[in-house]
Amino acid sequence: MQVPRLAEIYRKEIVPAMMKKFNYKNIMQVPRITKIVLNMGVGDASRDIKEMDSAQQELSLIAGQKPKITRCSKSISAFKVRAGMPVGCCATLRGAMMYEFLDRFINVAIPRIRDFRGLPPDAFDGRGTHSIGIREHLIFMELDYSKVAKIRGLNVTTVTTAKTDEEARELLRLFGMPFRER
Image 1: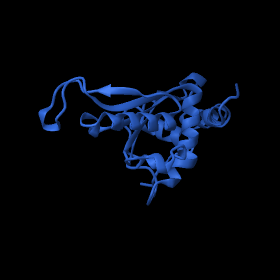
Image 2: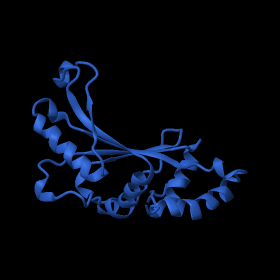
Image 3: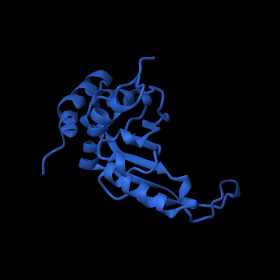
Image 4: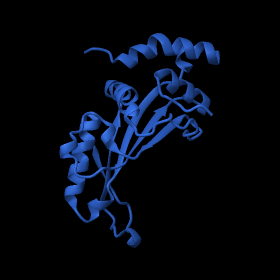
């Protein structure tokens, strides 16, 4: 099997650049991406189960693997949901699938976002995890517009082994994430 393009770039270009910038003594200290989690909330699934089926099918096209259905943990009367009802779906990508998705996300999907001026540089959680909320999942080329019944939002969370937000921001910037200037 062929090594993904971004995995090769990480090994040959990003690791030496990070070692030089942050003065790491060992190559194992260099942060890396461990997983990417795609999460799609489907609030209408409590009323119509076909909404969940279509959302699951669309997320499987985007991720390249079958997503898991997430269920409500407790009943909330204001949202009209009971415990155990399906409320969304998520897919966790690791390894080669993760690098392939990241490549498509950075080079194809992000430039298709309407009125895009760069990703917010402060969307980190303090421990090296970066989250992006996308309003329209139609930015992905894998979806057929004529078969999409409803436009949904999508959360993309990139989990890294970085200790600080600065290290994670530099890692993702070297991968090609277009961050907005502060």
